[in-house]
Image (cartoon, rainbow, N blue to C red; front, top):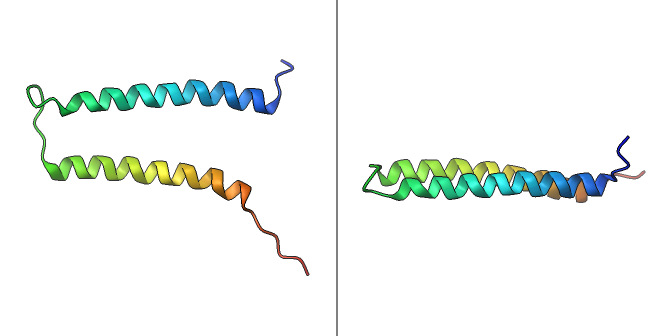
Length: 73
C-alpha cells in the first residue's frame, strides 16, 4: 500500500483530471476561430448544452453525497 490517504488520493486525481478538463476546454475554444471553422448558433448551443448538462450531473454527484438524509423511525 502506498500510504496515501483518501484525501491525498482525491487531491492528486482531482488536480490531474481537472487540469486535463481545463486543457480540453481551452482547445474547444479554439474552434471559435471562424477563419478555420464554420458553425451555426444552433450547433454551438447544442455543444454547450451537452457540456453544461454533464457538468451539472457531475456536480450533483458531489452535492448528493454530502446531503444524504436518513429517515429515522
